[in-house]
Image 1 (cartoon, rainbow, N blue to C red):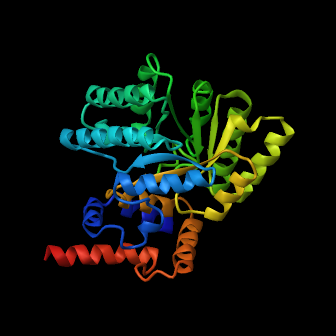
Image 2: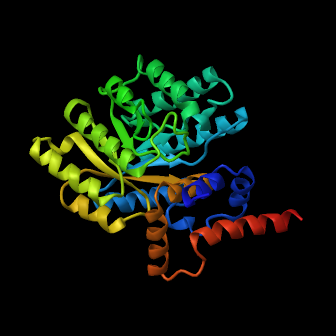
Length: 325
């Protein structure tokens, strides 16, 4: 098993996910998760805004199987929307359909989304539908299609590792799109496996949407990709208000500040909440450099709480088993 498979496996381990909620952000995640509640998260967003950086806020949680939990998630997101308005911060929402009941009942999930999107529209707040694993791809796009008949404040994500991503980006070119490489383990029958192939398709999608689409969010920590985009927009006279760079909260902070200072639109993906474990593990699975960045930032801060990312995951499992006994 390679490192990516290891972390993806950890992200899907429900026992460890539940244990993580008990132990909080003690094993490294506090560097990449903006707190466990709305107040802490809003303070983080305000700090980003002070540097000319906007935020997309993710109330962490996914793969919900109980209606009560989905309704609780909906209420929390509605509170976040209210907090954005009250605090007048430059931010919008990213959400996952499975957190709002997609695995329970399609119509139930759709109604939860309607409640969220309609409230956001009142305040002129954009809602981004995050895409998840391949099994949820079609129903998530179906939700986008249905809600688009009544709402224009929604967009979604195109994952570059899927073969069908070219078809999807053409279909949804009139939407605001975030383009990513992809963070789930998918079979070779439907997704590219080689990093070089994924990167090549990633650039192809970015260039297509910059030239033919609406607004493009380019989500990457890869400076090679960023430099390519800078050159591409210059050569093709693409205005800066047609796109933004996005990175995850806590990663490559110096580069985030630098890009904002250079005049590029920049948006930080800001996750918060106690359901942080799956998100955290997938960030480490996406690319080995994320673990290197994380460890470097942790030791730069001279914190004592983090024993190392992989070690932290192991320790969490051990602590949980001990408590269970």
